[in-house]
Length: 434
Image (spheres, rainbow, N blue to C red):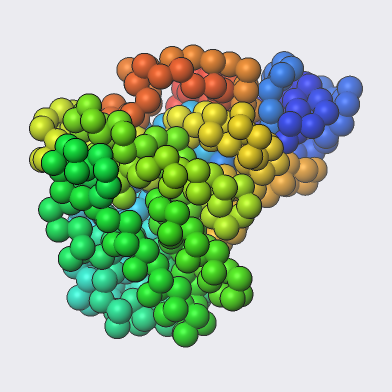
């Protein structure tokens, strides 16, 4: 394991400091360190942040390796500054047993690019009818703490209550995909002025808000933890703000694309903008940014959803829903939140590392960049500006809504427990990780 001396990094955007990494741990921090190291990195102008943690990543393996594998997904994560991701359960077979979650967990260990924490399904086969093996998944080597049927809503209130009650035994959390299915039958995009003009089936905000309202009440009733996935409407924000004011154990996430993009983009009929939940209005975007800034929304989560070209390069009505996002998330957050003055870099560290790790109960991640802590960190260049070219992505899929868009910032280096997975913006070769 190499020893690294990072020179002149701005810790959380503050004054320049040197950081010495040795044995997988941060050994020293200070100006003008004289320690010797095998590798010295000039980090002048770079921001040092704790390694990012994603609560919502689709790695597709097992079953859809044509879209993504654990290896390519974790490589994309490393290039985006992530040292840990939560792998969602909608694989083939579904991650609803100890065997499947352990398989995903071991594949993550083998990749070496970032830690992979599997998310277990709430119900068998994501069918919403019978609870999955929640306890067995928690007791497995993967130690699952987060459970979600993401991609589908746990719409049966009795099943949802039972899940919330069950996970209390081991301090787990149910992460809900809030979508009332009857209200979204045939829905293609956000219900509103644009859907009316385009003649596309509308996806009403109330379909999300109704489920969130029900579930915060259920969580309070049983005294359990609820996490709301990919919040997308102003109304949802108000319900979550109300629940938190009551002191209920409710957390929430927002995606980068819901912080930046609106339903006006659907006028192009380009399926790259087709996503679940759908892109909403400018008013919703404003409310989401404000809620992330004031802490009502706890975390930024990518909802990285890779799809092969044939599933997106087709007519809108039959195209798959979802966007890749790991490699652009930090840049989008800089544009939407930092450059607008809504968050500083300390706030970014809180929303993209500290809180996600706390929600997922991840050990060793989301820790401050300080002496004695595991060396999970990212060096980010906020002054960089470049055009997004998905052909340079590490992810196996190319369904990004940012193709050709100028975005600020670039990950210069990522360290996982003192091992550089990315240097000078490029992945480190696997043999160097060994």
